[in-house]
Image (cartoon, rainbow over all chains, first blue to last red; front, side):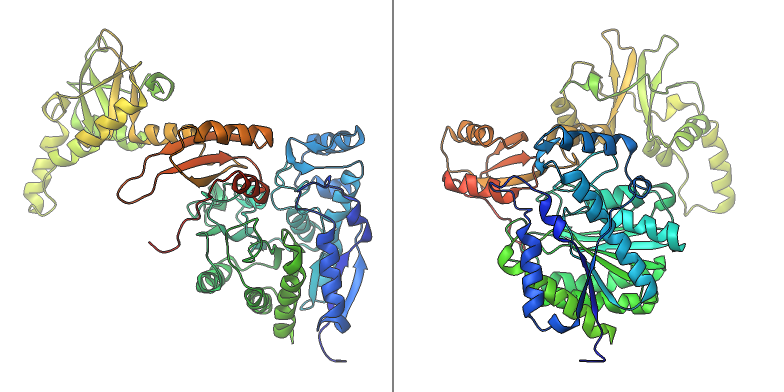
Length: 321
Length: 218
């Protein structure tokens, strides 16, 4: 055990203060609890150290979001509104503060990775972020945690060529918005086909715009797709990364493509998440000198979310030796 | 649904006495594929397309000297000799359906739009048609996607669906009932605007509807 690679989890008890109103809203505090419980009981338990998040600064949020959205978000929650723009985006009085703390988990993660490249660093955070647009919330997301972490990596450590790989069941429209016109950053997403799945974006045809042409790789999967279809895509992802030559990798790690998670029609297995973890760590080893940060996105089936995250982290650990 | 709202107004035009070379330059420069041909009063005389121009040029297998001579002659040829005179047109109040049927039956790529006096006021292409139907069906509207519901032949199925969606405050923007074909079953398509698909599915299934999950293999 002594020489086994460790895992750094960045999380915060305050994440549970983002209250989505009960009822049938699937983005609930229990999501993080089931992950914590599983990691504490499972085979990775002895390797885990936990770090607290820190709130992202206003200037760090503005690296992607507009001033107008920050004001609107803060004002909405302080005035007692229960959702913003759409009932999906449930908020409570504390949501602005907690979303800022959630965005900050990626910043702590980037600092850890820079100190210990090659290590396994996972932000166990909520609210999630990859649907958030510069000026509005979307699909339970308020601040785009992955993009804010990527911008911090660029600005604080001069790692300009950041690539985000998103294996959440849903396309990360906000990440694509951030990167699609840039030549240096890149975005890879595997997700359920946009005809059948929220948010209705992520067409294979979208490859980037202007200077960013060729920097977006969308690989929509038909409903029912599972390990066989995903594993077939891995060589394409590796080739894409070989062309993009990123300095750092951010993983938008969503687990709602699991076969029992009814928030998507995909049929990923627990073992597929382990294989994805191994594949991703190999990418980091071969292309980014181990600079790799994973940030939790979706995953709503509470009975399996913990084991899916555990399997993904185990895959990362196996290849980080 | 009216062409007026989807056409390109005041399109670039040529006159019949301009040369093929001039038409070709305009098409290339502006990345167009069709130009209406008009007279001095702006009345429709015909259409010229990149295909008409390609047909007028010598074959690429012609001998080089002969080819060069023909190329020169073609360049100086007036548009009147190569344009389509029997072209169809649309009025501003024609519908997208009119255009679709013409495109499909005549295998053409664009139609001039004319006023009551046959004056060219616009052009409408297959690209415009696709864009218009894309808007109509909501394709690409961020935050929305389709769910398919099996049609159970209930004559009131649409009103029942609408009532359920409104009661549960599920935003939706399109509702389409499609008859089956030899290749597909009768189906109802609903474009909903929510991430919480789990809740929508549960609600619909509790009301007796069957959500159709597309098969992976044909």
